[in-house]
Image 1 (cartoon, one colour):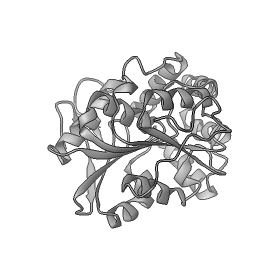
Image 2 (cartoon, helix red, strand yellow):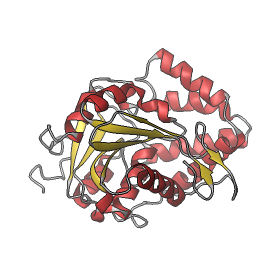
Image 3 (spheres, one colour):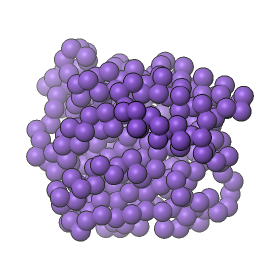
Image 4 (cartoon, one colour):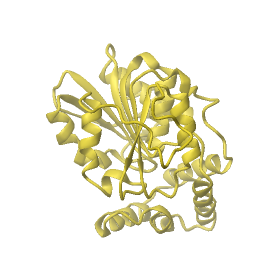
Length: 283
């Protein structure tokens, strides 16, 4: 698929009557959803994977290598319009990808039928800003390959040794434009900016499931409570013994995703102990 500025590779699995688009996390490729595809196809979803520019095999043809948050939302919008121009689509996003998915749903509420947001925050937590500060220093000192070790130490305790090695290999092969993209996103995170003024979460109408790992050190529970108040169609699932990487750490969570996306799972309520300020009867 091509836009004025980018060539965006995508893949479609299945022939179901509903369309699900998977939105990658920071420097993740469409491969991050490989374990989900067989489940969503079996559940009747035509499942779409794609790479953002400066990730995977996507190509920036003109206009420089930088890519703002709004431009990433525009790329998602182009993918949605290309694969499903008429009907609403389901979205699932992980980490940074959940921010892009939420921003799209706020900007185009009529285009989203259902949504899962993994490890979502509308405002960078202090822990995430600390990681971004260290990441910026690594890039400025010419050591972007060490970002993988930083991420594993900071929030990757729960991933397998094989996944850790794969992450290290990926970061050893970062291209200059990918390093630049990560640097600019680190600066954005360091600003501490709440992204909601850019994208009004109150405009999201699709039934939405927030999924957080019980052990995720990057999650700010006050911000999650705020998101639950703003996205009135949202409910929260806390995955026991999981950290930031969710289905990479606990494959069982894939069933949670599919049950919600198919509408076969009653909407969870906010966890009363972790989010005491949120009413469990909020609608």
